[in-house]
Length: 355
Length: 275
Image (cartoon, rainbow over all chains, first blue to last red):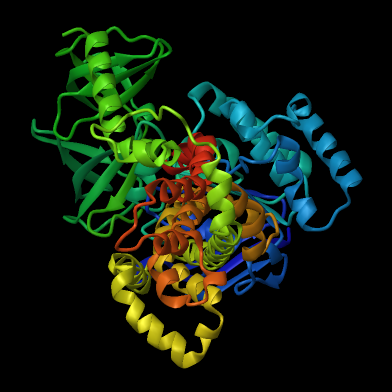
């Protein structure tokens, strides 16, 4: 694998605000990388810096081995799909698609040919002479994508491209974008605030918070071994349950849910008496009859989507349990909660880092 | 009160106000058509008994109005061209950059708008005399009008530019265009309506400009219609019909343009003319 994009020590300041803090990230050629994080975490700033739309205040960015830190966007040879699609309203679909070719001096005949080819693969052939205002949201999205793939850029940049679509179309476009990426063998950087998009589409997920890379790696590695409480809570839906606990003798910790201390086995060694956070994913807890699980808890309320039941317990802190199928428990019922030792994540109480 | 009744009432009030507002215009046209005696009749007649249509060609010939109108067109076109070129650039910068200097710039631009022409004319006159610009009187007037009307243009066009999403420009940059290229091929076409409308408004303003033209142009062959009309009037003037005929010939083209373009002007002013 060769490196296609490299950030080394990238910093970005807006006045006194430090938006990107010493970002080091290398992206392999042909990989699909998702930058994910809550709003204001710097993921869009990082993408825009890569495109050349933001000037970074420190560090270097290179694309395909060439340092592009000071180059304007047009000399970086990347294509970008914007959240608002940014289709040129005064141009037809065909003119939108071929704008970059026109700027680069490609002849009219070749432009038409290229537009027809791309339109055929993205299903826009019948719409080439329409204006963007005459298209539906999904069609506009397709035009934005086609505009990016018509030339052969060194990287595709996506800035939350699906956030303006309805839920069903979003799921569909997710697959389509990923399929397109595989077919073109392109390098893609995809910004999203939706961890599900990141998990399902990317080969490599980068979780950002407040301008810092909290963790990066393969999607399932992030799910299985989150590096800290933030990543643990951000990846996975519904979010992981966190329980404050005190380390006891014999690789154990005690938690208190309001009804006295409960002893749990933990998979790591920690100084006895130190405070830690126990993390358990809702989907790793199963409901049992009272007394048959690790401990019992009363049910606060349940929500069912038909295929899945979400059960919240009336404990402090509240626990969320996800059960596949329908589970007939009533509010106030006492249930047992069971989970494997391997399902327990332990984080340092002070630094919130994984132990 | 029902909905339709209230709407009709409001319509009647609007028409009444419009009638009051437009009455002088009506009076100008009918006075031009009246004979000398009818003009001074009491009570005045609201419709001429014997319309004197021949007064229009007569006054046009008598006063050499072709020359006056030509000078008005030259001054107005020159001002619009200068303002459009400089003002569009200024408005773009003021729309796209946000910092303390831009705020200061905007404040100064708006302050220029506040200063009346009659106040500015003295320093302008002195400056133009000293620099020799006064040897080209029409150019001098164009410069003075441009300085006076530029703020108005900048404020209007800046709003238009601000309605063009920044992302479109960024898309053009990533697509391989330069900042200037993106401005020409994306921003300018999208802001065209707003710029055109502002230019038309400036043209109409400049076409009727009086203070600078009167003060800076001595030669009668170079004066615009507004000054020509003023020269018509003296302490003992009684040829009101001729003055009104002059005025009618002068304003009718502007009025006609406005009526023809009013739909575009109004829509260009209210919407960002986008999407």
